[in-house]
Length: 407
Image 1: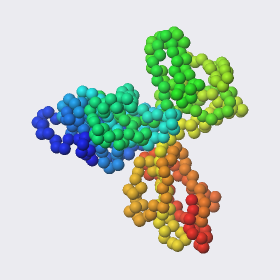
Image 2: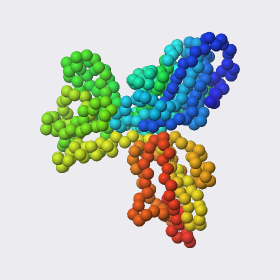
Image 3: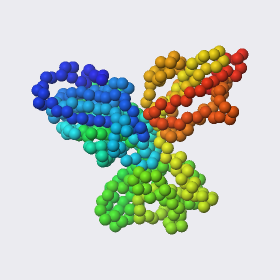
Image 4: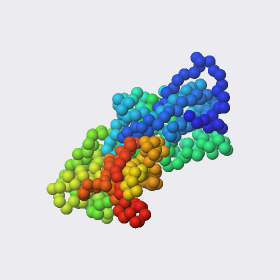
């Protein structure tokens, strides 16, 4: 742990052991797979404080002054997915990317590696008190809410120190109580509004033309309505597909063009439905193949994007040949790899780029180097977030009279 001197007490105040209770707080950051990165554990009293985890975890807990009703111990750690008997329920296109009540909200900061593609995707928080059932964490950590908590408790340099991690790669959780688990989920952006018997409309901020209109009397009571719109480049709209999506099961598309009247107005199409489902407007010349095409295209559309980097290590054992190892890293550090112990040299590293989980990554070469492969073989490896995505292979110099360079 790294103590932030100006935000955490320099010396713990002695208290009777009977007054100190343990309140576990476990924050998980997943992305299909969890990776153990270290833990964070500290004592806090009425003075509040902020503590950041070490070992590359990046987790920070901020408890403003006067929010702890009594001295308490805060324990926060990552968990592996296999440690949970009942992991959070995830629909397709989603991935898990990462009790005691106090006198007011506290802030938990957790780094994530999801690509939000501007406004197309979002980060949402699930919570569980038992590890068996999960629900969405409803206390939104908006910029206004976070600033209100910080401004009423910290000033000047203390407030500046708290803002040093405020980036788009940090998720802030605002909570007034500590469940056993938090899970950080990346998903297609979802608009949620309350709609009652009086009717209403829900619009998408990703594709503004997408709207769900509820006429008066369509609902018998007020419910929360969620609307997701994922843009896919299609030129025209001819076939209409529907997917009834029970929970997190696999998508099964059904062509309902014939049974669903469509009304075309300019560049939009309207229709009526009595079921909650995912709908897809799709252009397909081969009508008999529309379901198969939809399934294949949908599988491409639901790959979850992550921000990762490619790192290349090399070890030369001959003037004209060398061993290369290519990594695609999510949260790993290149100086912590096995290659550093085996005396490989880092020869190239990319910036953070978007990589789709589950997709194959293909390698191509140019310049005066070429891979040593079988005839017609294409080097490739799959990408899994938070796993070691390593591809070892040999390369040779094409022309010994020219510098051994390539890309």
